[in-house]
Length: 190
View 1 (tube, rainbow, N blue to C red):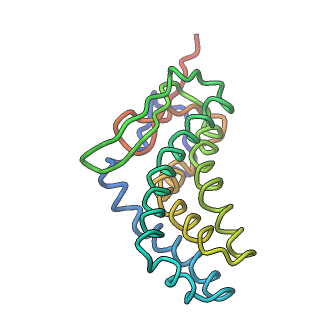
View 2 (view 1 turned 60 degrees about the vertical axis):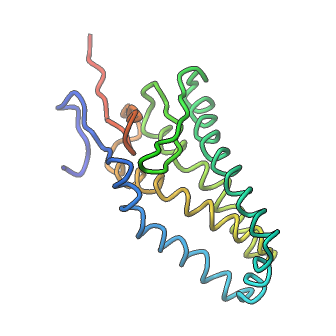
């Protein structure tokens, strides 16, 4: 692929199967853990982290938080498309791919790559990065674990962001209905 996507073609597929996205995301998961875990360990230490989650009640609460967060993550994608691309709610589909154990929100309309990137990163910022930064300042184990958890769950989104890195912001992309990623679409001139 060249350094920049051009409109010499009708469509360019920039997606991967969901199961491959999970595998390709593993290095991003490791980097995310290091980028969040090392600063927290350096600033606050990890002793109270393990003490906090040694009780079954706190672990159960974390599990419930995880499932609620997964739903919020997909809703934030949808709201981002609705706000930034003016996509109607009825054009957004929610589901769960059982083979790859991947929940998803799918936008049924082509949007600009800029809007697509915003929609990709918004859940990671709101649910992952902001709580992590709060934990660095406050020392809150709950903010740290929540931030780390939802930064890691956004690794598929980070992968897609990487896949579309050469697409110009003003080019239109269509969210792939079955795979992780999108297709660059070129509107025919009439």
